[in-house]
Image (cartoon, rainbow, N blue to C red; front, side):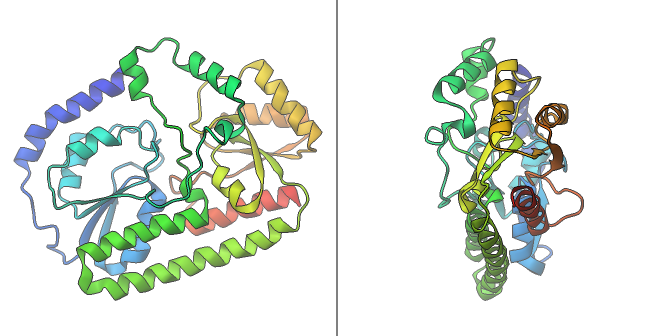
Length: 326
């Protein structure tokens, strides 16, 4: 955590030189809007809606963790030379606030893609499977050796940030991007609107297909390594239980917690344990072995995986979960 705070301070200091040496170039030299984003779904939404009118870049490298990413001065220079910057919000990018303050180009349209989204409040959702007592205990253990300053920098928020894992909420994120494009380039409003409506239809058709499938199954419970799928569960009336919480974690889970989720698997006849990259696959495999279940991979999709598009990855997740529950 100290390293992250130091890195952020270095960014701020480096800006004076970096931004001072970079000219505020005409962002439209190619006739296209320059759109900066954080996570992969936002990049894809902007590319679909913007089409040949935009150049989209991500400041987070492929396969990097958006939670712990540390922006460099060159990233800020890129943002200052963009027309639009889109981020997920809801503390998904825990480093975002000081970065936003350092975007000196006031012409950059900054878009919090979570605006207008139907957010899951973790205080109401018991932190995705934890009781209030368990969450308090885990918070105490996680932050036991941090200073007050370090704890503030570690703030994850009280809302589930994985909004793109719901096609309903992802549609709202895409609409926020469309609105920003129209604001910056009203001459092409109809073009952006047409592309957005196609995206919206594709998302809704997929949602309706799987809403019908999940409606007709009696088993609504599944187990994952990482509690990233709360929005998906809400869409389809499912319940997730997980080895680790919303923001992932490091190390082995306490034996008592492992025993509790193992009992849950046996009581609910869980035959598939879903493993996701933010969780330890060895823990998922151990749980599957003890529960007499198999391990299947699903994806949180904040980075592009296996050359799948966002919608292909979403459909993959839906189908894997459906096949495990039917």
